[in-house]
Amino acid sequence: METQTIAGTALETLFVNQQRTALRIKKSAASERIARIVRLKDVITDHFDLMLQAEFDDYKKPAGESKLALGSIFDEIDVAVAFLESWMKPKMATTPEALGGDAVISKIIFEPKGVCLFITPWNYPFLLTFRPLIACLAAGNTAIIKPSELTPHSSALIKKIISLVFPEDEVVVIEGGAEVASDLLDLPFDHIHYTGGSRVGKIIMKAAANHLSSVTLELGGKSPAVIDDSADFADAAGKIAWGKYFNCGQTCIAPDYVLVSENRKDYFMNTMKATIDSMYGPDGPGVDSLLYSRLVNAHHYRRVKNLLEDALENGASVVTGGTVDDSDNYISPTLLDNVNSDHAIMKEEIFGPVLPVLTYRTLDEAIDYINQGERPLGLYVFGKDNAAIQAVIDGTTAGGSVVNHVAMHYMSPFLPFGGIGNSGMGRSHGHYGFVDFSNQRPVLEM
Ligand code: NAD
Image (cartoon, rainbow, N blue to C red; front, side, top):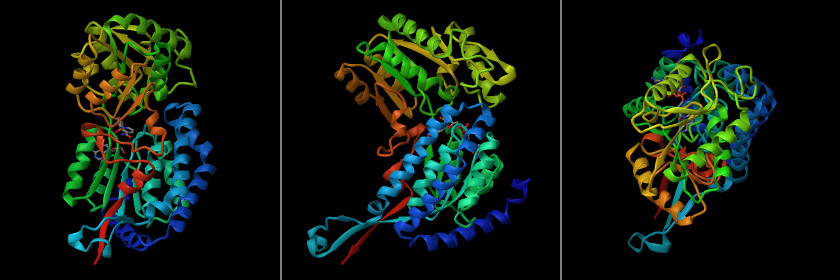
């Protein structure tokens, strides 16, 4: 198998070749970098249907969901192509009088970091590989990519697409699991871009420390959706159900759980149940459905099923859903009532199609609850009362927030995307991604 032959010397040779190339493309003009990005776009476009098929083959991801997510790759490319020339221009700065004032030029140049490592996850294999890669290429770097071993059809196609666009000394894909990732982490990368769970994120950061490689960590966590009493409940229910059950709940920015006031809980539950039943049918999509993903593998299926069973054994109840099928890693869209903070399901990121609803007496209580946990990747607040919305935003810290929707901040190439604390560090997308993959080097011309 390739993963065995690639270890050790072969990896080092690849790395050294990329270091050499990195020095060359460091000097590349915007037009050359754009040409590389457009070549990638063309090959992605040619392979689009195969990408949909690969994601389906990996865990029955429906084509409609794949298409929607993959659209962000093209938005990212278009923005990089349109703005790269201006991003690359040196940024002029004020020179203090003590250093010569207006007679002296102060500027910041954006130079590529060098050789970058990508370790990417399975839940959106193409999107979460290609989207950050565009920023990396825009900034003038080379890259070694290790996609997830859990989605082998997608990983093989990522490797093929990359090999059709780039020579190995510019961008190369190395397939394999944790062992291969570990071999790669022994190399002195100039930057590491990791997307995945927080547990492995800590391993990556420790390994990066050996070489003092800079890191971008796109991690996960429990992203709450807070419903203020002033919210349009039907609208909130539709958006939460969409964001939660898309990709079978395996989205880093999906709402993990809901906080609603005690007074309005019954109304919220009824609205949510009616919404879910109308989206998927009262018995759920069914194990034969081609319009609903499965859990990625038996391990993750069992993990989510165990969280569900533990909650039910400890007093939680199913409002709708709760159907499981071991033969196909299938869990239907599930809404849970009577969950409390001691349940295992509230102690880890669910990453599956089970939505617990918890109640609060006052909005401050909801804010305190969120602040007792790790800082979330996404925090969503629904309401029409601006003061209430502002109180939730001001009272909490999160990687990103959306008011009256979920997850949509990911779609914009004009907003920085990323986490804080346990949900990650560094910023991706558009100009922010370009800066993340650049060394902001001050030059003082005296
Ligand atoms: P994961 O951490 O299990 O795996 C991600 C990658 O890390 C894979 O390529 C895997 O091979 C590699 N890996 C696994 N063990 C390793 C080790 N010991 N050393 C080095 N590399 C190792 O994550 P996952 O299960 O693929 O993804 C799910 C998690 O990712 C969730 O927590 C989710 O919230 C998060 N996520 C975050 C974002 C984001 O943009 N912030 C996006 C998608 C997923």
